[in-house]
Amino acid sequence: MEAHIIGVVGWSGSGKTTLLETLLPKLISQGLRVNVIKHAHHDVVLEPPHKDSARMRAAGAYEVMLASPYRYVLAHELNGGKEPLLMELVGRMQPADLTLVEGYRWEPFRKLEVYRPSVGKPPIYPDDKHIAAVASDAPPPEGNHPVWLNLNQPDQVMDWLLSNR
Image (cartoon, rainbow, N blue to C red):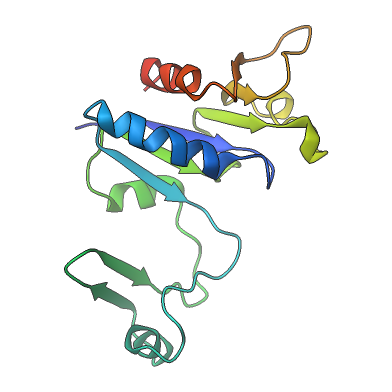
């Protein structure tokens, strides 16, 4: 299974996570195995500081795996080291038909921008040649722009994802 990677980028509050929450069950119902990578700009808290796995990380463990009958999570401490590149992280995941990446706006890979003018920020696509489509609740502007999708019609966005993976 080859990893097809599509980014979902946009300003905070534009609806990236909501769109992914809507699309994931639809993609999975099509028989696709879908991975998601979510970039966070803040420290990630997997368990409260008093729990065992957090205590082991605080004590200096390089990696801590927390496992249960329902899921497992691997926490790798960077300890001041460089943040891994997106493709390094993709390589650590199990193969999938599609990997959706929320964030990593600076990485050079194909992206879908979620753009809502009501957020009060300019669109990103004019400055990022890797944005192949825009999902927006606004009509397309005049002139050159990427493929313009209706954010309020998630099936339209899903069709674009399926035809571009």
